[in-house]
Image 1 (cartoon, rainbow, N blue to C red):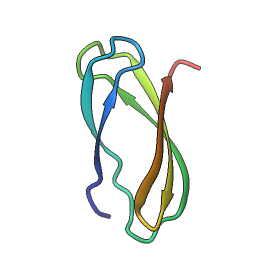
Image 2 (image 1 turned 135 degrees about the vertical axis):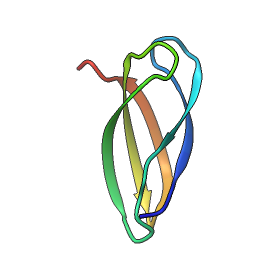
Image 3 (image 1 turned 60 degrees about the vertical axis):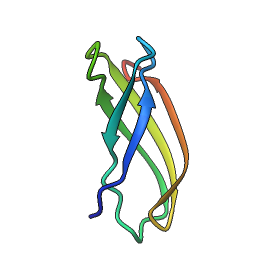
Image 4 (image 1 turned 90 degrees about the vertical axis):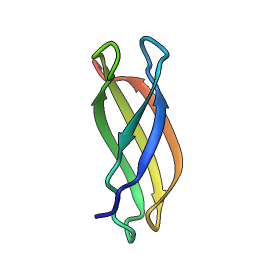
Length: 65
């Protein structure tokens, strides 16, 4: 599994922080994960669409849902 770092903006405090999606180079599809904000500790749901290991879409929303 390869490192796939992305910078996201927290859904709650609007601060930017880095996450590692850990996406395999051959993966294609959709994925959802929860990442706690490094600043305010609130949960952020990160939905991604991936094609052959490359992130084509990233959406951050409330992880409390």
